[in-house]
Length: 269
Image (tube, rainbow, N blue to C red):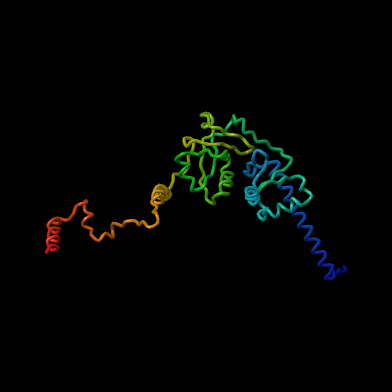
């Protein structure tokens, strides 16, 4: 068998060519994956596009990074896809992206008629006390994302809190009581869920105490801020009063009249 020896120049050229080829394959793989995520099954990754089909880069990259083999992806890698041959498949907006061809549909006009008995949602630790007291509250056209799968609920929750709190929502019962849920692939959306239909771990004593302190601070701080002073004014500090006796129940010390008379007599003399 005859061995073949490549010159250093040819070896370097071959290595660079292979590196470029591997890089191109990587870009094309990411492009195909993005088409699937954005255009086929965003729900499979816990993503909810806006009414125009756009998904924010930040949300998209968080979801992609959770997938094996795509933890490296940053916006710069997506930009490479948008410069390649698959660029005609995408459209970008301000901090967001969508595919021009979409196989999914999201109908927020028709609530789901058939609901599972239980749905799960993972909330931030800071939000846990509020949810357990007031429920999932509506706001600014926001929809809460729920799933039949606990792992998916936790996966979505961890995008905002590394250790979220998993809650159970009695969806079927809530739906019968008029709470709205909308089906989107494997996940469900709801604008609000009353606390009556939510169960989960009790709020810890430490969180309750810190929450109480925060509320007291919230109420007291504006009162302190209102106590402003005009230039040249000053605040009285009762602890620095040179005559502390006059602060006792607003009374003057006994014998003050006699002492005043003596002072006046001495002045006349």
